[in-house]
Length: 164
Image 1 (tube, rainbow, N blue to C red):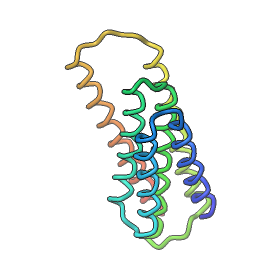
Image 2 (spheres, rainbow, N blue to C red):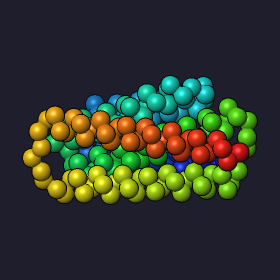
Image 3 (cartoon, helix red, strand yellow):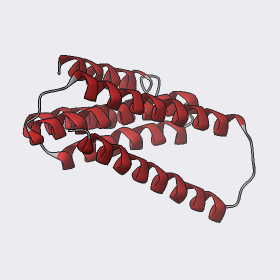
């Protein structure tokens, strides 16, 4: 279980480090999000973990909106996703009362790594391509991405629960 806490600390540190060059307010929002993830672990509160993740992503979005480097914000969002997923996994293990099985954790982390690599790769590709798209199409694409991530996370969680 120590390796999960180490990965969580590393993910939060990376998420915050990529936002250091931005405005202090955005860094404070991200720090509040990171603190909520820690509080979620202490209080075993999934809602606090989700709120912390939202604040970390919001901070990265504000960073780009104010002219920050998009690739740094993309990396921060990926690290935030990693921190949120590891927090949720630790909470799941505590709720079920199962000690961290190294094989089970390894499978979870491999899938998380694949999702992060694909997400960062597709995000990087999107940053490289300069297309002029209408607002409606962009809104549809954003909805598609959010639904896809939600479905994939539900699939990953269901797959982890079936492996017990």
